[in-house]
Picture 1 (cartoon, rainbow, N blue to C red):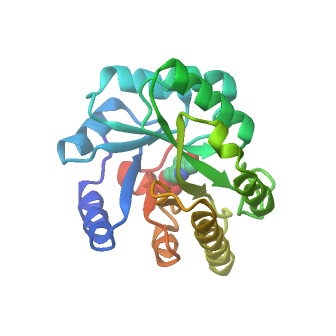
Picture 2 (picture 1 turned 60 degrees about the vertical axis):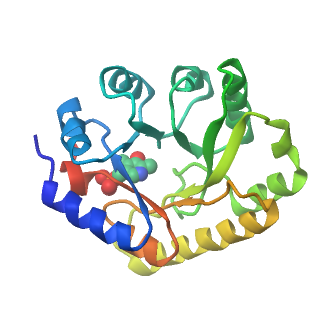
Length: 221
Ligand SMILES: *Cc1c(COP(=O)(O)O)cnc(C)c1O
């Protein structure tokens, strides 16, 4: 086990003073590592792979809030719909429609964040600013009775270029503020941005939820 308890306590303390939520990203890590942070009071964990999340959720305490933070394929929504707490990476209306369909089947509401494409890299998924604006302005969101759009999520470019990352986070914060105004909905209150390498900068730029893995659990293979 390589859980860094000291790092957990110091990050927790830092985030608490700033009113920022912590999602501990446990992908690829064993259940014992999750149990170790759970024992310290951590309840929010993030996973990227549907099968891994389903397996972990079945064998770990029921009061864990499971955040799905990876790229979600429409045909897999049904596996996590019964228990997922928040789906971060909703990157298309098609996926939102499928989440709504599965939520109706489960007779529940499912909370989502819309993913916005802010990185210069080609590979990152998400709405671009214009398509998000168009979607919000269209009123089509009200067709999806059983999803709650709680906010936005984004990932900055994977780069040493701090100025670029800062610019991307600022862009997302601006889009977040515009969307909040456009939606004018009390449930819209979450901006998920920042990981181990850039969370301090993300918070400076307005993030209120960070997704931290390697600083807590050690590097992944
Ligand atoms: C893996 C992952 C993280 C955590 O990354 P670290 O650099 O280990 O903190 C955060 N967000 C997403 C979407 C991820 O896939």
